[in-house]
Image 1 (tube, each protein chain N blue to C red):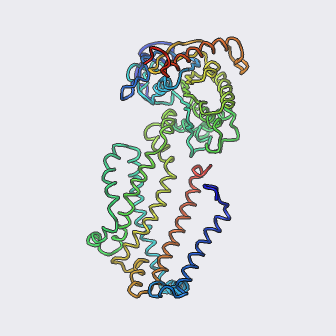
Image 2: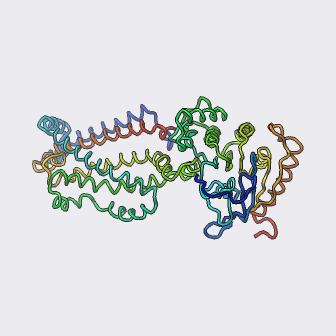
Image 3: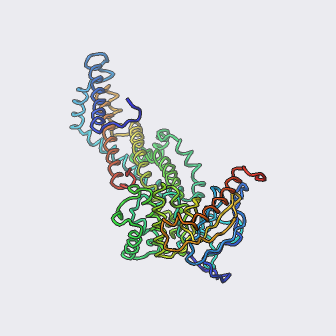
Length: 271
Length: 257
């Protein structure tokens, strides 16, 4: 991405979302004016009911959608389109079906005109990290859903983005696979210390993965609360049964429940 | 029989061959049994016999001419239509510019152009190629544009987030994603090109399978006409198999289940 604009504000935030809102053509307000600051090495989970605009927010950060108002800045530079500095893992399986696992992971590196040997070395490192050694020559259709998403994670990480955006990446997987994937992502994150913005509607996932959980309200979406997760790293799946986890889960369950009821029109005073 | 239940490969082959046997059996029965007069329909044995005579007396050259015309006209159409279709599929303003005209032009029957083309290009090879070109070009353009335009949006978005630019998305996503479908389109339209070449050869030609068929009509040689038609069918079948085999080789990822 070209970076010819000068930094406007000096903050230590990697990502700064300022008064960003989105209204779709036709007048549907997907997101009300929203502020969010993501610090270096943050793992922020955005939790909300379906249709709350959390994916829209993430897509605007990725540059795939444009905000109706407000500004998104990465390291002080205004985001005006998609770029390699913001890697993304999608909920749908987005591996290129005509490329093997290795070629998929090399996709962004090849775009950077990196020498082939170097591409291979980097790709191999991340393929190993996500536990897919031996599958380099497989086509996506020969892989399970979990393996495809691991490849997608390796592909995004190999590109060394400034921030990793994840849009319900494990949403299409079965429960057991999802839990394995969460642990794997945590292990990778604890090693790489990437800055991550992770959208989910799964409360357990939001707590287990994040340093901070940002809760969004039902449509029109806005940030309802922003809670720190009092769990140390490295995290182990057994933490899901500890008291601090349960406390936070109870609180978030309550917050989300109200929003789902509001969205379903079950609360008095709802539109 | 259970609906949609798959059939064993061996059984499938057997059933496919069985129909050919039934077909030739019925044909032999009605012609050799005298149910249909020889003037209207020759029997299979006479057909094979006169087919052999034809082949030894220069019909191979006619077949060669026809194949050359189909391949030539189709190749010219494909070389121009595929790039235009790709550009139309990728860039919507280009599509908006060409699409209405191409949609209109593809309904113009190629055979109706023959008198006009004879006027313009004479009765030589240029006219034959032009008929096939008109018959294939517009169909190809539209079908290729649709294939490219139907590329999964999430793959395009993934490429953008990996740092691809607009040109990179066309080259590295739109083209490879739609390539198997474009190959399939070429296979189909080549089949249609075969019908145009025969029509072109029925009028104002001095060589080719179509020419032989017109000549045989004057002689009431139904055996030769049928042999000519069968040759076209066989060539079509062979090219179809060849095309499919090449597609499987070139796009292994599209065949995986």
